Length: 143
Image (cartoon, rainbow, N blue to C red):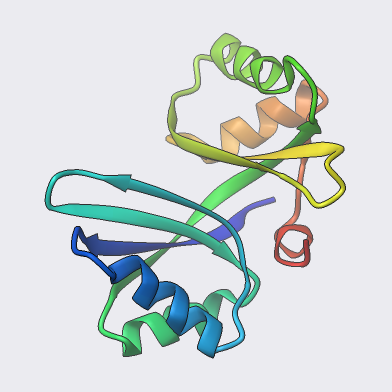
């Protein structure tokens, strides 16, 4: 029920993001989703890729600071209110979202919401109880 995500510490310099994507491309790694959060001096690039371990190794070899964390991927119909319904469930359970990002899958019928919660097990339990679809890691990696 959890998806491994790679987090890369990124100096806020021109070309750093291009270096990372080049390393991934050279190693045949496909990016499924990404998010960049930044400050004036640095950023954190969060990636979901199809080959997690290889991506971690390749980026470390390229001199980047890399970590892996678990996130939850919730699939909802891509229509008005899809995200709001998930957030309502989360709010009613008094769960705290550390961060999230989203993308629309290839068919365009569903959106995938990537969440990191303080209480991951309780979040999974709550979302399943409320009838949401939580994707398995291979479903995300094989999109």
